Amino acid sequence: MATSASAQLSKVVKRQYMELPQGDQVQAMYIWIDGTGEGLRCKTRTLDSEPKSIEDFPEWNFDGSSTYQSEGSNSDMYLIPSAMFRDPFRKDPNKLVFCEVLKYNRKPAETNHRLTCKKVMEMVDHQSPWFGMEQEYTILGTDGHPFGWPSNGFPGPQGPYYCGVGADKAYGRDIVEAHYRACLYAGVMICGTNAEVMPAQWEFQIGPCEGINMGDHLWVARFILHRVCEDFGVVASFDPKPIPGNWNGAGCHTNFSTKEMREDGGLKCIEECIEKLGKRHNYHIRAYDPKGGLDNARRLTGHHETSNIHEFSAGVANRGASIRIPRTVGQEKKGYFEDRRPSANCDPYAVTEALIRTCLLDEEGEEPVDY
Image (cartoon, rainbow, N blue to C red):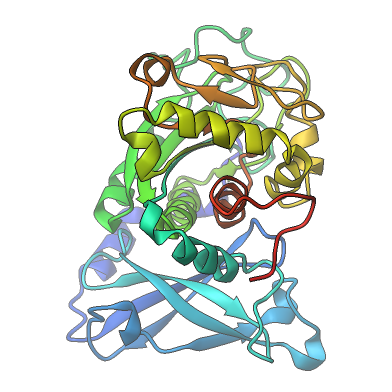
């Protein structure tokens, strides 16, 4: 099993240092999205007292030329603290702080989609948009081979692994349990987890979150997963099709509702939104992975519980459709719908913003409106 050298370091030795008192000072780990649109970076600074709100964190900066975000001749980028969480690795009173990235001229970095997402969310605040995102991922060894798979072959075909239990069906549950508890400690709105269809593939769900909180909580949940995997010496992959062939890909199904959809008769509003989404399929496909749809093209083939990337479809309880209306929603005539198109490596800010623009702001065409 290919695990990293850091996994072999004694965690017992580390623990004696982590138990030392730190006085009144606090370690704040600043986290941001790098220039790939899917990688996360972090660094830590000492604060003199425990922050009580996001306003208590100072702005900071970093070398953008080392994160695919700037030229070396003008490399300073600004970190703007945006969301605060408890630190499950260093524990209270230490903090995780998720940041937006601004360029030297204070304009948003190319992969900072939070700024426009927040503006759009504020425009529809009165409609109370709720989101829930189902994050699938694959546990890999440091050699890129799925965790627990035979070194020179494949496990048995898909069938027994989804929500499976047992050493021959569930690969890497320790990581899943550690991540779940760490998210709860941090204050991340994690609401569930399960083993997925492909062995070594898992899913966690975040939500329901209102507005901008969806992106904040999912990104921090991803960061915590990467850190947990680091401790175990393995890698969490959000690649939408990590293993080619007859194996399920990985998505980030997005559940969406508004106050009107959740009230009696809300199914009419859901159907109206689906009609709008059908007329703007290509725009959403471009927003649903960091490479403008190229990553998702490997996954959205019409097979393995996916829709075809070139066609829009919707149906009740249909896992092969672009949009699925849950059976209970069809029966109760209210609730939410599920957009099954976003890829596992999507930016949740871009996904939720696109849904708001099309469904609630009635935008049409291939490009977003500049407000």
